[in-house]
Image (cartoon, rainbow, N blue to C red):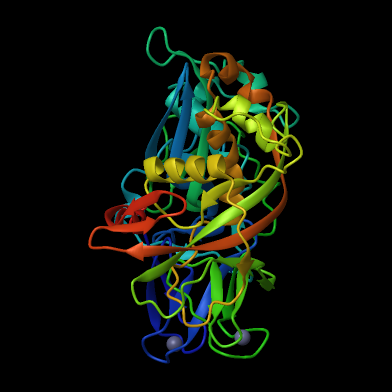
Length: 430
Ligand SMILES: [Zn+2]
Ligand SMILES: [Zn+2]
């Protein structure tokens, strides 16, 4: 999906990819980091000849990794889906090809249009769409969760004997896409095509009163808050790097927040070294007794005898901070978590070649549960408990590891890891 926008500085038209977090204007050379308060909000403009009062219906747009814990294994795939964020049968259940063929625009804070609030989360709507439950059966009550109101068993059978115990969505992008509609003769009309949006008359299932203030998009100059230097940002970076004062900044709608980081065993001035970023997370896992490294050794049934001190050593979870296909993502998260590296580090990035961070911390935390599931030695026994496990991040650190670049791979000898260059290339397209 491509987004149409005007350069906030000079007004020149700019076309952005949906994953872009950097607006770089070809005319005035302005570079701005694009941020949103919760998620990005886009809208399709209505057709010019619409006379009625238009309002906007929200759809979730998800692009990212999808993990499923089924019976005794973890399956994964990539998902690219647009699903309604309201449970009304008087609007379209799908936007069809619009995300591919039309260019939406950013919802701006000054927008006075009426944007309806989402009633369903992406996960809820996805489950409904997948299980082919028609929206006719849907009545969403404010105080009930969707599962309670529909009585959908979460443990739905996929293939006859297989049971889906848990699924997780690690978003590279999760945004709200608003489609314009209007009401004529008690029917909701699609304001792009000027046709009825569904065969059902409007049943008041859309909460028109509840349309709240929209949270718009924020544009921030990519200047280091510490030294004023121009920071390095790739088009999809969520962390910006100041090469001058060697600092890292997490972009948010409130501005740039200094990010803690560490650099592992630096072999400086080597041209074939590339530093790849990983999230190291100390988490509180409620519902399991995974607290120490000794717990992990037992849980994953590692061929090791428990050493002195392992019962007390804090357990850290790891995840790549860059985009790769789900199989590589899970392999890296699991391998490093099982190794629990704890070497001394420094925090100087000067003169190093680094791979940009484009997988946010929020998503890395979300992935911990899948990493836990994939490490379980006794998956059949453990998976039914997955829905009762809660993961809360206590602290996190961005850690750069040096990888040696070969023709087709990045290799980390100490961690015994090899990442195909192709996997990083494929990750760019997610
Ligand atoms: Zn410009
Ligand atoms: Zn700086």
